[in-house]
Image (cartoon, rainbow, N blue to C red; front, side):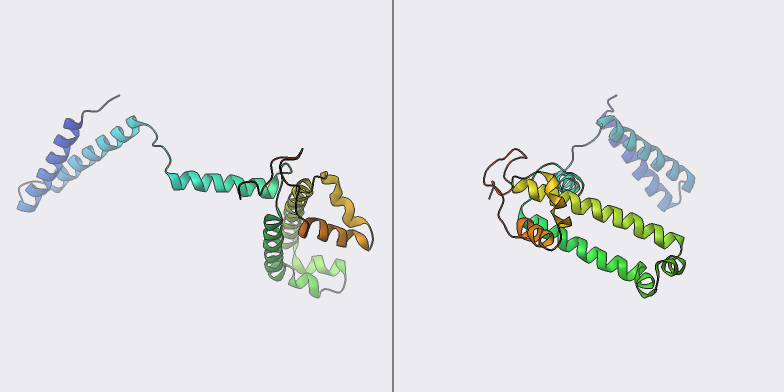
Length: 194
């Protein structure tokens, strides 16, 4: 469905002419409005007939960046370098502190668990549970990918349950040691392009 550009320009001229007539007092407001609406309808039909426009570079970059963030936070496959691991950990810490300050201050003040849930209410309690589930998922995803970068399986995340040494091992392994250079079975080196 192609619309002739000449038809569009004629409609636009008629609309301008109607507005000039209206200013001179020779045409009605309704007539000018109808003509402008007809012109607008024709322009919309032309735009619709052209089909979707390609995305701009900035839109493509935003979509790509959004996919990368989603993969970083929710996907268990691939590798993550130390910088992204620390960014995710510090980001989660800040979000944790803000949400706990907003919703959990009453829970922290309660002396027992039964009292804590009666003070907060059902909605706040459900929000905290959902939030903790999301934070746990994100933490596991980033940690598993960090262990992948160290050329270890994701099951190494269970090292934190070893008393005394487990948490320290986790911190050193994920936070301070460099990942495997070059590709490994879990994916390409996240620092390869640098």
